[in-house]
Length: 375
Image (tube, rainbow, N blue to C red):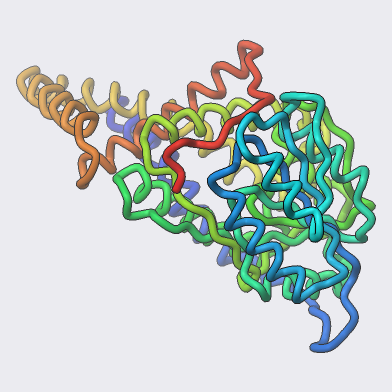
């Protein structure tokens, strides 16, 4: 009986962030956002991004920036070169007519790079993006129009992935991200989104905080809006595109790194998180804490399932263990199909758990490198 209860609780906790939490958000009244009228003056903006060995992505990125610059001639663009050893410095230097390059002292990490760029920016609005992300031409104007509402302190865009059918890992990653985007939409409708991804988001420059280099700068910077009593919203029509990571190994490394930095960030922000309004604390716990522990719930649930099967009959438990073992082996060696996708889901949960465990032991991931399998 106890094993059945534990198993049920573990299943509920794994499903909660993606199934029950969205339903609860539907019960919260909507908070509309006032946008600028067509033709109204928009605030001055600075677009910033960091690059390390992004020679493969930069030609497309620079072409995209040129098209944005045609639409918005006054848009300031700053790039931080984090000690690249490939053609990245030459590609950035060749685009000096549309952007300003700041060279770092070597490998110092994205957080240090973004702080350097923010200190050099002149725009009232800081727009953060990544070196491999391309913005739709209408994105800048649509994003800036949200700042006509004085209560808005930060605006996220909508990230869409290309190449999500390239492998099981890419398919699972694409599905996960579509769920994430839907959650952010619902959080935005009810008040504040609980943090931004670095692909495309913005804040008022006056709200940019100071923070250490080992934390996840995207989360710290975006949550500073909430801590300041302003709204952090998501604009669905501000669209950015990125290529999906195709290889399982690359995706797992990325999950470990992001999870470790997220945990360091959570510890750093804890005093401010505790002072948030009850609704925002509920959102943060639902979106972050419960989901980060998903690997733990899966592990405990697996043990409970085995104990429940054993209480029914030892042979049932043995058959269950054999079936699960075969599924895991097939999933590991497969690169496509439902079993490979299931394995990628499980590995993602345990990669997150491993990243948090490493962070708890003091490990940090200040520097990064682009995934080789990203298209």
